Amino acid sequence: MKRMRLFALALALMLAVGVFPVADPAAKADAAPEYWIGVDVLNQRTTIYRVSDNSVVHRWLCTTGASSTPTPQGVFYLPEARGAERKEWFAFTNSYVKYAVRYTARLYFHSVLFKKKNDNAMKVSTLHNLGHKGSAGCVRLEVQHAKWVCDNCPTGTMVVIHNGVDDPRITSILGGPAGIETTPSLPAPPIVVGLTLDPAGLITLNRGESLQLNCAIEPANATTSLRWKSSKKKYVTVDDNGLVTAVGNGVATITVTASNGVKTSVKVEAVDKTAARSVAINANKIVYVNVGETLQLGATVEPATAAAGLTWKSSRPRYATVDASGLVTGVAKGSAKITVTTSNRKKSSVTVKVLDPNAPAAVAISQPGPITLHAGETLQLSAALTPSTAKSTFTWTSSRARVATVDASGLVTAVAKGRAKITVKTANKKKATIVINVVQ
Image (cartoon, rainbow, N blue to C red; front, side, top):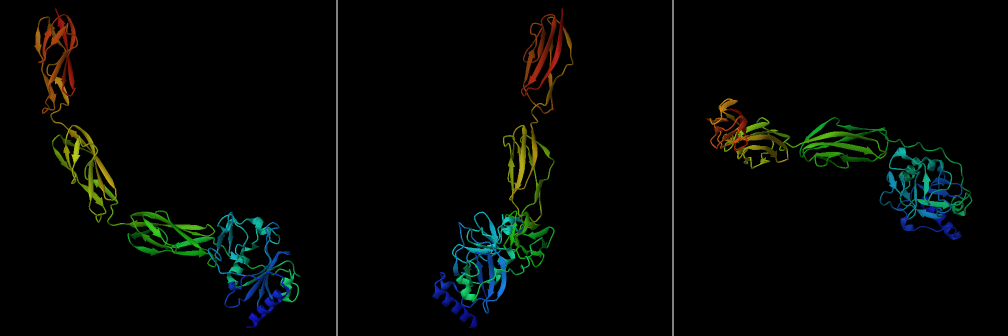
């Protein structure tokens, strides 16, 4: 009651002399705060007063608005926080600050500026500028001082912004001039230098399982927010508290990052016992089958618990086909790649070469050459195929019909003195040659 009467008396006195505007009383807290704040824009001082006796608790150097963007003077009451206010980091257009506490619709108490959301990225010039004007209307403080305001000055805390120690705005409350002597600076809040995850190493989880990761902060009394991230959400997810859940089949890196950029990570392998890790066709890389014949292929899937379901495919069905069970059928001479694929797209393949047992691999003329004939003589040539099962028609030709001719059956007739080559060719273009020398 004593503190409430003190506030009421001071407020009545200030209203009576009409020295400043008063903010919306609806912003005041239900219970009187323990402290109130004075901001001297002439001397660039922020003072924390105890409500009970107006004694000085802290007085710090600050930076208030520049001449073009002055800090408004008057009495204000800290409103309820909204958005990112009263949290560790607050973003402005081109900068970050820490521990922002709003005192008007768009102006704040906050720390000096940072280039990015990182304790090591402070704009040092704004630290050196404390004690001088230069803000856009906000009240800048050292980080630890801004944190003190954030932690100890709740909604409803009175803020008196005045111009000098003799400004009636402040003297009417204190009963005399305000001072400018600063108090010893508060200890700087510790910043995070290291993070350690428990458990560490490679973590293996079955699909559907979850595990809570615990993060130890060094030093332990450092204050920070933690941001969790998974490199492969299709394998492993992580929530805002470090709870990881295996949702797929693969390895993800889980990273935790402090607000100043310090980070650490751990690998989590999600194992889906129903998903294939690998598949292999039980055959050599190259297999053979004759035209019209079949060859049964099989495949081994790892792990053995993987769900069934294999898909077989031929790259060239005109040479070899394959059915759903892996049965290969030779269609025509040539080669095709047979591929088996699991339901999660693991693959293995072999090359099938289709042989035609009726197609000659080679042809040879039965008589050894060269052969000498007299003009007018004849000689019946014959051809042999390899393999012995091969079948083909033959085409016989002479390189010099004026020396020797050959008919469709391979009958050679010597015509005139000279040398000629007799060639036999199969339907699939295999050929053999013999030399005929014709003498008078």
